[in-house]
Each structure stands twice: as C-alpha cells, then as structure tokens.
Amino acid sequence: MKLLDQYSLNELKLVYLCLHAALPGDPELMDSELLQDLQTYLQRMARAADVDVSHHAQWATWLNNGVLLKRV
Image (cartoon, rainbow, N blue to C red; front, top):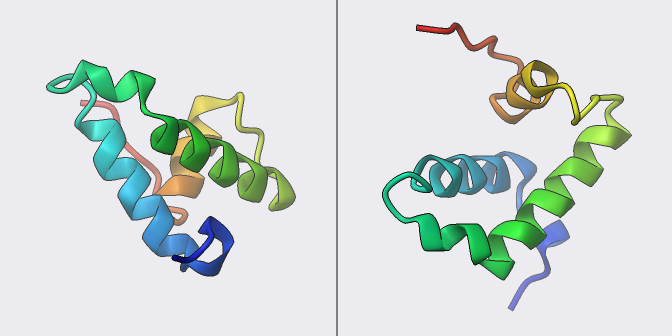
C-alpha cells in the first residue's frame, strides 16, 4: 500500500474534491479519518505552495489547479 505522498498530487486533489462534494448526501463522511488525513496532507502541500488555506477562494482555486470558481 502506498503512502499519500506517493500518489500524484492532482489525483489526490480530485479524490478529495469528489469526497467533499459527497458530504451533503453522505454526512457520515465528516467523521472519516481518511478524509481528514487527506485534507491535512493537501493543506500541508498547499501551504508549501504559499496558499493561505484559511482563505476559501485560495484553497479552492489551488484544489482546482488554478481554475477560479465562479459563484452561481
């Protein structure tokens, strides 16, 4: 089994975004250790790229590989 840092960062971002999008339909994911570990790892990678993870727009843009998200 691989450690998180052995996977492609883009693949991890995609998995995180999919899991995060599933939260409204599956609220028990909020207690998932895997989701928490993945978020912690990705936030560490984002901080290393000078992203302020406490700023939602910066975090979301980084997760989406630079694509700015528009509010609907």
